[in-house]
Image 1 (spheres, rainbow, N blue to C red):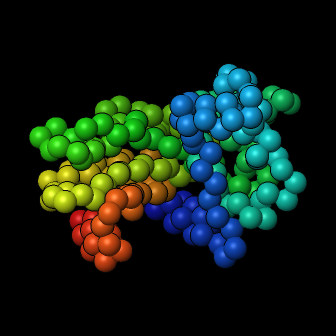
Image 2: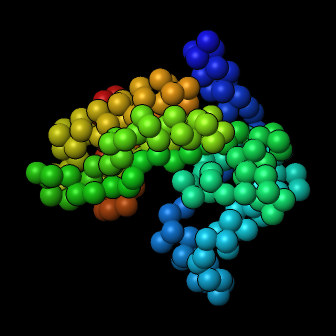
Length: 201
């Protein structure tokens, strides 16, 4: 039964002409957007901003899924409807960002590991109960003269695989996002080579 639900959600997330909206900015990220407009970065202003995005007339013609932040999936619209339910009612699939961000990878200078596996099984069950149908986890891979190392690639691939397995167990479709940073003075060929190594891992 759970495999059928996962397959149904996965297929529903990839229709022609519609995409996924990432509305999962952290508080510091949304602060940059708000401060440029003179808007105070408060819980309610974040709620109203995201509600505005989700209720824009015609938005569901272009957006099939929305990645929410932990705070957002717990919030309600002005009429008291949970924002996840509001999305579903408008024909969009609610999702949730579940990683806890990046930290320096121990034993490797200049490389990162994404954290958040501790307690993830319980959080996924809660998010499923709050209406989420898919999840996102981002691993950041940096290109430099001696990086990424096989250690960094393998460690992040292992974390992504554990996350994906836990999502499937909970009935959530996992979006596996190994983000190879394009920044730097490397060539496009080097970026392509690293991306191939990362996706193969």
